Image 1 (cartoon, helix red, strand yellow):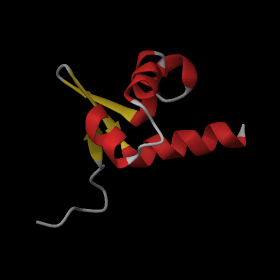
Image 2 (tube, one colour):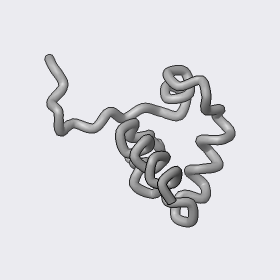
Image 3 (cartoon, rainbow, N blue to C red):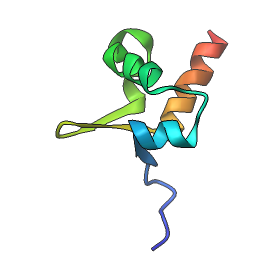
Image 4 (cartoon, rainbow, N blue to C red):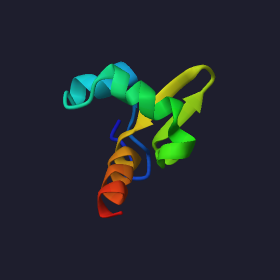
Length: 68
């Protein structure tokens, strides 16, 4: 089954850190904890108790912060 272009790529924190080793578990958890204050609220998705990282929106947030 191929992934639709509109389907977000969601990763657990562990999966995201494995794919992008420039980020640590602690740095991602810090961004999650302060997401409302740091501009990363759109980058994280909660399903029940699990928190997922939307890869595309995460890097959009990084780019927006770089432009500011």
